[in-house]
Figure 1 (cartoon, rainbow, N blue to C red):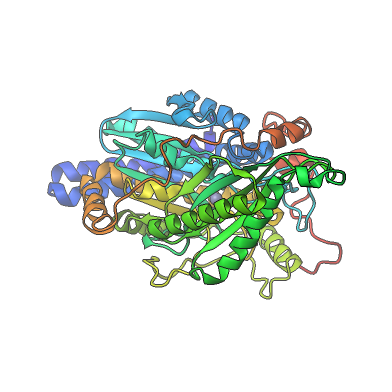
Figure 2 (cartoon, rainbow, N blue to C red):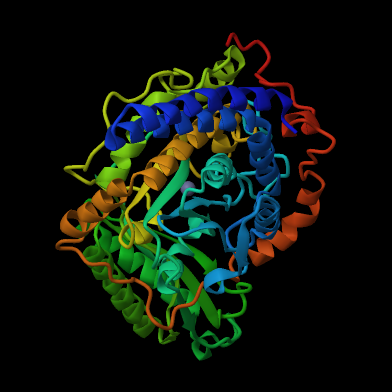
Length: 541
Ligand SMILES: [Zn+2]
């Protein structure tokens, strides 16, 4: 299937065989193990390179599906098929979430869980490789965070390592799992509640970034709880008999006003925001129902709970003022703040330094610089060409920021997030601009670099039980010494699998026309007929 790669792989086996021979005859056991491990790593790197087209197809395919959280039906069907074809047993619909799965291969210890998110962003439809805002379909969702790429990192890495493990009869279990509805922080706390990580030794998560990075300890950012407040009033003719009605929308507006006054007296690290998901039907009918959806973000569990209680109090008070009823609140998502494992991060960092950043072409740099200029970034510096000098450790001052429900996994199992360079620095996030590189050579090269690191780290963990032990020592004696995981989810909360259904139903028929067909086109750019890169006329870049 990959004639070129075959040669590369064979070439990589030769030094390994020599190393094995050396181990038998000369070196004592402890000293020999690294040589064997290093040989396997070299083999895995060559194998990941050989699978570059396979990785590219996955990245482009999922980009073209552009599915919102809890509606990733095409994406999960496609990924599950790829994994089944490659010998994984796939358990679908885990934790009561139809678009979540765990795929397993191998047996015994260590159990390594490889996860990455799969969902996209509302209104982020964008033509890849074009250096300005140009939706493929106006108003449609799109991969404006780059979650179309992480599974390709994990699957490519897993297949490269699986080949070695099979041949060498190495014990170990690889589990590939979906970060479903991450943009809603909607699934991972449910995976924990369902006990799906109970026997996992290490979780290696991947997330798109603009560098090749990993970190340990508490990082900048927040955890959160996502809560919907719904109010029930009574309709009336808004002009003829307004005194007979009670407006649920009044309660929503009063709650928002109350929250925005309280905001002045909250800690600087908090982030809170809302959208009104039901604001009534039409002005001449007093709104009987209205709902507002809040994210309450803070830097630790206790402060998240405190913020949430404040929200509940203001909602009750708003209902009293409006003379309406506050209905049972719904938790739509939750996330613990993230804390990454020191030992696993150091192991990953050593591998990052071996791989380095991809070789960017002049076209890649032109696209990056043109987009940075388009967004009026003061420094249009293009793509990164240098790794960070040191591994990032704990933050001393956390001023808040985004969240990821990988936090919940990280407080149950030693975990790290590997960031790989498939995106362009200096973008706003959750935006069409973040989709531009995501089905181009930038994304493809970033994924290949990430897969090499991931493959090497898996090999480290499979072949060095001492590392897994040390990771757990850090987890038990340092990370969770004083802080114990308590779910933010209440017993009655269930995955919010109805979210985004209507939006996907609206856009999917049109989006289907643009699904990537790798049997006819080498790349998605080819299929769309987009010249790479497409820059504004007269652009000097
Ligand atoms: Zn993300």
